[in-house]
Image (cartoon, rainbow, N blue to C red):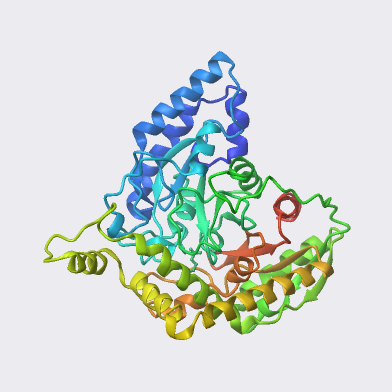
Length: 472
Ligand code: GLN
């Protein structure tokens, strides 16, 4: 078996038992990149030489018996929206195609403090706006499970890299589902942590009241390890809190699973609904209780998300003006024209659409009415989730209503926005959610989503690990 196909957990054990070196693990990944990257196209930048140096340092530390991080020597791919010092960081946009950050995001510092090996920066939808990776202005990424299909988005490069064994782990970011959807489409595990759990310092923002960085891996256990490495308070991001763990103890015989009724509606592919229900049933056969739980406001979820997200995105993207950094238009007569041309040429259609909508929704003529109403409903939804968690420990639903669709198939923006139906609720309610593979439609993977109350990541891991170890 190739080292590149093993889990982070297994590789860490082998490294410590001196059954392999960090350099060997890395070479196995680089070899796999050589084989499959021309088809998959996960990476925007491959940092081969830097990775070799990092692996060498790990091997030297090991030899000297120095203390190493739990994920030492594990190759990881980083979504290209997360700043890396001295390494191109594009957000898959033309406007940042030459941007080399002078500093690392806090999450990258944490990977390095853990002695991890960064293999490169991976593709995404432009500024994380999309569900298929197709809005990337730089390249096309394909689903390793079926090269005619999309890997999902926006963290499509992250999920595809892990699924293709071109990285052992990856970092993604999730504003409305961008970790969970590609994880489901590519057959890997992805977690969107509780809002405020992982630092966003140095992460190019999309919508600041939703954005969260999170882990992608082959197993729940691997995602758990990476989450522990990146989570925690950061004085550079005032939304982060001191590590808050849910103290609830996991016991399969006491587990109450809430079937999220509205997310099993007619829009969901019946094979997906059956697979997710089978997951519930197999947990039930080990002692868990199942009950149907309803969370209202279903039809408002996607529109509500788009109001808040576009308003915040329009504001966040104001900084890309051709003056500070990034792309600048060549021919212009005055400053006004320079701004206009830079943004016209630098941003793609989806980004422009959202800037226009967000600017319209927050314009003075409405006096903040859309935003106010959206925040009112966001609060209502959070309350509805909190109420649901009085009846159950975790909510279960499909991660996506359909399996991965074909490249070029979903060109209508409204159709694309609908792919977020199952995922945006967790972002709106600021709660954690994990997508775990639970079957196949033909040869395409299906993701089941487990949603928990705030700070219940470790409980979600226990449920997921139990499922992986006992039900598959
Ligand atoms: N697909 C969603 C969108 O287009 C989610 C994006 C994200 O989570 N970054 O906005």
